[in-house]
Each structure stands twice: as structure tokens, then as C-alpha cells.
Length: 112
Length: 115
Image 1 (cartoon, rainbow over the protein chains, first blue to last red):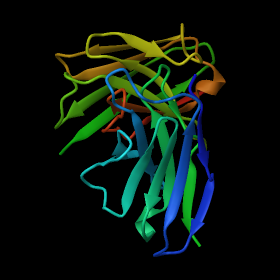
Image 2 (cartoon, one colour):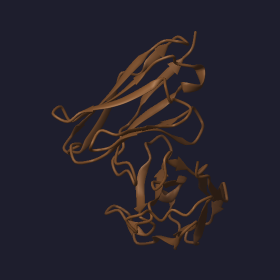
Image 3 (cartoon, helix red, strand yellow):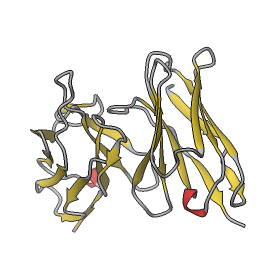
Image 4 (cartoon, rainbow over the protein chains, first blue to last red):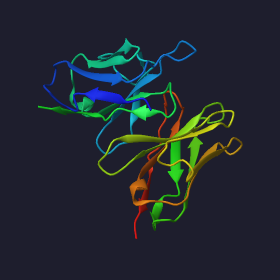
């Protein structure tokens, strides 16, 4: 199985400051169709997860442009340029290239 | 309004069975692969099973041979038949549209396996 390793697991941030989460995979996520199926989700407290970014760097329509995704192959990063209070929650990466699908352990973002 | 609604969760004894259902309104399931993802209390997300548009199914090793995923395209509904349930299957089960980068998630249904 593809192991997804997120770091850090806990991320206290100051409002208005940047934040970055790493997701490293044990195998390349490049699929035979040329796409890389790496997805980021945010689970706010008490809510279901919600997709933020798909195929490495594509933001969903509800996602503000302070969020960005990057990376290739086995190393991926989610960045928040300026953290706001509504960004608090747990962030998960997920690979959709190999079976079985696998998630990272989650990174809990909180305000200092 | 777009909604994904799971049902069928509840309390079941170890070794028992449950069938989860998932219906969509305001969005279609028919042209998408579908998945089940679970979250044990206080834990992270665990992928459980998926079914493609063509009907091919995939399972996590932890549920293989015990769970069966199926879909009814005419009813726009997804199912998960869970047999031989164990305490470690206790979790919120989410129905999700998509298999490679799921977009819509339901609110989840809680399954508790306990005597």
C-alpha cells in the first residue's frame, strides 16, 4: 500500500502568517493517464471533510486563493499564504492513483 | 441544494450485519465512481471501498471478504453491506462521490459495534 506521511501533525499558527503542510508518498502518484491524483481535504471541527485541492494544484470553487497546492511524484505541499480563523481544522492528503486508496494521518491547524 | 445522505447506521453486536445506503439529491452519481470512507472516533480518515462506473469494486484489506459495495444507477444510490462486524469497525461512515479525488461528502452515519 502507498504510505502517505504528513508533517507536521500539529501546526499552531498566528493569524495572518503563512503555513505549510508536507505530504510525502512511498510511491510516485503519477498515473498512466499522465495525471497525478493527489487531493487535499479540510475537516473543520464537527464537520465532514471537504475537498480543497485536487490533482495536486487545482483549487475547488469555494477555496480562497490564499490556498495553493504544489509538488510532483512523491512530494507534495499545501500552503496557506495568510492564515485566517476559518482555516482551523485537520488537513488530510489522499492519493487516488493506486489501490487501495490511502490518506495521510492528518495535520491539525490551530491558532496560537 | 446539493445533498449526499447516508443512512443505515446504528448499534450492532460483534458478528452482526448492517447495510448502509447513500442517496444523492441535487447531483448525479451515475457518471462517477463512488466510495466509502470511515473515521473511527477521534481518529483520521480511512478509505474503505470504492466502485467504478463500470461496476468494478475495490476494498481495504481490513474489510475484504466482509464488506460488499454496490450501486443502483437508476435510484442514484450507493450501498455498503457489512457482515461479520468487529469492534474495530466502529466509525462514522462517509459516502463520497469520486474515487480518485472525491468531491462531495455526506454527513456520515455512525456505526457502533459493541455487545
